[in-house]
Length: 434
Image (cartoon, rainbow, N blue to C red):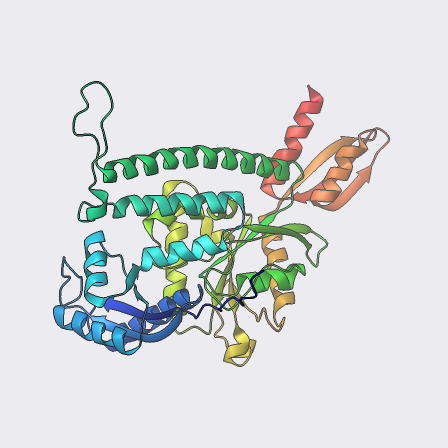
């Protein structure tokens, strides 16, 4: 029996490089620094130890290496000095650029897409999340299969009587990846249908849905936990949660809502991963209210808000989200404690300043949600037969009864209802009258 003690694996040393093509103005320098900080956070979130970080100004993109020859040589020396095992280049590299940089630097090189794919692979918890990440990985892999990779040029025997030259290994690999992609897409469609049934079931027992959206690391999961008392994973790292999480809570008015936490948005999301947001985006599209959670203390908070709004506007353009989605948004200016409290946050129409960590401002946020739901309600009057207590109970459960006149045969009720609830109730009425 072996008594060997397993040796702890030393952490992987990494350098994070941001190629920057923009003018050297002061505001652009701040933007580059914020982008580099985000890239460092992404790399650190999967356990890499960042020993060097830098912004490299590009005069022109080199097809072979992206960077200039002097920059490559300087980076090679830094890699050797700092014993760097992985260089993260915070942009999209072509397969040829990645291969040439690995040869020149003598270490592994990954681009922004590969980095975010790794993070998504670690964080995905639900079946759909895992399938989406695998699909994105395969589509990225397929784009890396280029003929400059000599080990993929081996010939295999052909099929049929004529034999022929057969297919190269690269063609076989591409075909296998293509087959797996087709199977994954079929599985995903089944998962989506199942989730659609779950949403339909929620509509039958309807409560207003309030969805949290925002830039990654804005504090959405911390806010979700503070409001629901749940224990959703919340860490000071990018993409701490990937899959939608839902809990029911009660507002000060007594109205019950469903709160949905979603994945954080990020700038320049790799195209392979846009589909991985689908589950989250569908929950947002279904929401009665969208809480846009912002890290108001972040130096790049305005640009982050623009990134989130750009994604939502894109959903509206594609028809996934209603065109007037902005009227459903309450902006949540989070992390006010880092600025010295709520009073230090500049007031902004349609927003509420809070600190999810300390709880400061949470009562005001719940009141704002209540108020927004009330504004969206319609006042309607119904005559309900006395014997039909179930319909009356439904109105009390899902609306606000403002007046009631009990007669011998019928009860006249004036009630405030959300438009969706009004449609459901009138559907029930119509089916009983048939």
